[in-house]
Structures are given as structure tokens and as C-alpha cells.
Length: 138
Image 1 (cartoon, rainbow, N blue to C red):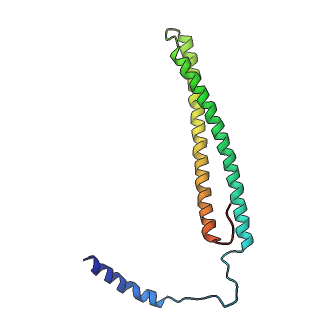
Image 2: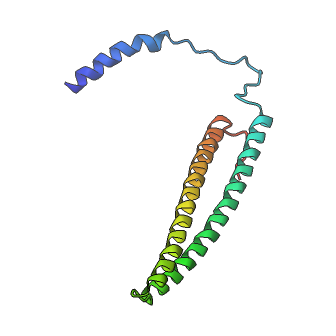
Image 3: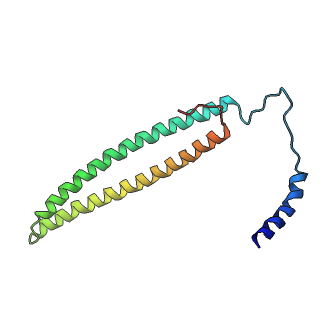
């Protein structure tokens, strides 16, 4: 049954393949999909974007370490909290709420940075595919 479908599909596609015309560049004429200068410039721009993302990643790592430190202090404070002291509980809750807000802001920033890194990776793949052999990637 499957072989019948394959044969039928080939029978339909074969005339299309036979009708396809192939053109070749003139002998001796250079054939570039894009000039080497443009590929070089695009490559340089991608490396600049990567450097900016690397700087953002260092900022993210530093903020993550600060948040870890705040969380550790909150955990120690929580374990020693006098639950009968309503003012102390309210003050702890305010600090905890502020910490949670900072974590949410941090997570949103990380998500945006991950999106930018994903776009950069796609653009890098496009460059490598489009300018294949013209630019040297670092």
C-alpha cells in the first residue's frame, strides 16, 4: 500500500522535475549571493550584539547573586520571627514583598534577554547560511 503511494507520488513529481530548467552562471563570471563586505559588516554587527548580551548576562548574574543574598537574610529573619509581634511580622512581610517584586522584575529582564539571545542565534545561523564561506565566525 505504501509503495503504491510512493510510486504514484513519483509519477506526479517526475514531469515537474524534468520540466525544471537549470541555469548556470557564465564561465569566468563571479557569482556571489552577497558581497563579502556586506557579510563582513553583518558579522561585525552580530558580534557587537553578542558583546552587549554578554554584558547584560553579567548584570543578570550580579543581580541574581544580590537576590540570593537578600533571600538568605529573609530566611534567617523568618526563622527567628516572633509571630506574636505584629509590627515585626508586618515589617518582615513588607521586606518579603519588596524581594518578590525585585525577583519578578529580574525574571522579566531575564526573559527579555533570553528572547534577544534567541534572535541573535537565529540571525547568526542565517548569516552562516547566507554568507557561507565568505566570513569567518569567531
